[in-house]
Amino acid sequence: MEEIARFFEYSGFANATPGHFLMILVGLVFIYLAIRFEYEPLLLVPIGFGMVLGNIPFLEHAGLRLGVYENESVMKYLYMGVLKGVFPPLIFLGIGAMTDFSPLISNPKLFLLGAAAQLGIFLTYIGAITLGFNNLESASIGIIGGADGPTAIFLSSRLAPRLIGAITIAAYTYMALVPLIQPPVMRLLTTQKERRIRMKPPRSVTKREKVLFPIIGVLVTGFIAPGSLPLLGMLFLGNLLRESMVTKRLADTARNAVIDTVTIILGVTIGASTQATTFLTKESLQIFILGAGAFVISTAGGVLFAKLLNLFLSDENRINPLIGAAGVSAVPNSAKVAHQEGLRADPSNHLIMHAMAPNVAGVIGSAVAAGIMMGSLL
Image 1: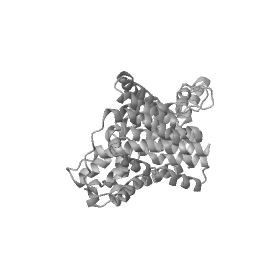
Image 2 (image 1 turned 120 degrees about the vertical axis):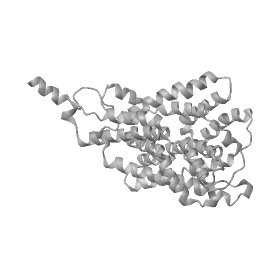
Image 3 (image 1 turned 135 degrees about the vertical axis):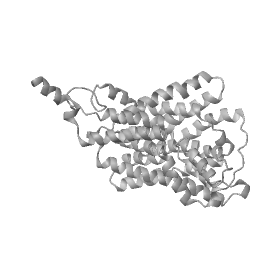
Image 4 (image 1 turned 90 degrees about the vertical axis):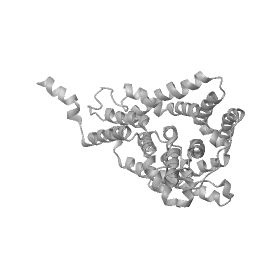
């Protein structure tokens, strides 16, 4: 009987709480959204499964070494890549190897839309301070507005490690929900006439320009915000591997094997970090609310700035304000949403190539914003 009692004491049934079941349900919802609606499946399936895995109850502090918060557990060793900021630069390497910067190179003024879409980062920083978070925590929460999960992980690992789970889950959740969050904001801030604006086809970009862009990009952003170098250095390296045409094997490895492996480990461990006993707090709820506000503000900032630019541009050079929403760095989902909204207003108006310019600019902009915050707050 003692052995039976001991078996039950160590089982999940004896250690389950309503919070565990709630987080398991959230994980199942993530998996459902990924499979049923294809909302960022490469992220939500590992994260959702990690939530289920991390919330199967066990007797904590019994030396089982199972969860991400227990010393010497396998999950904690994997989670160290998150806590130490190792995974985000590797993801940026893969993103750089996958990304074609031609739309941005052909129309550099669209970089301003990527910068304007970072408005939510700084306004949310103020909002977080108002709610009682300190400077470092507020900066980490604000970066959710950039809709860039790796940047959110990197900055919070440096400034607010104790909040990294909630911040990362919020960032990736809103990235996955781009098709639901952004369209209402875009329609509210634009007229039917503005949504039908046709933009000039982007000019052809030479190979020399493509090769020079990552070299010039890392020099400029590195001098502006040295704190962004671990992210943008790897982003531009990946892009140089792609565009140089002499390192095809390395580029293929970066955009396939490396980024896929890291994405799986990152998603599962981030999901497992939502262990109910440590994750379900008032702070986590506040972070999710602030993150939603940051995302909406960033979307609005990009759209409104595009409208402002149109006041100074000739009719033939006008910008469709919808692509301003792509300035958040959810690549390529935000660009796809802008394209779809353009087709809704005019079925023959294709905006995808134009929208990719502020979209990739948003990746650079959010990393620069993170670097600036690190430099000014650490």
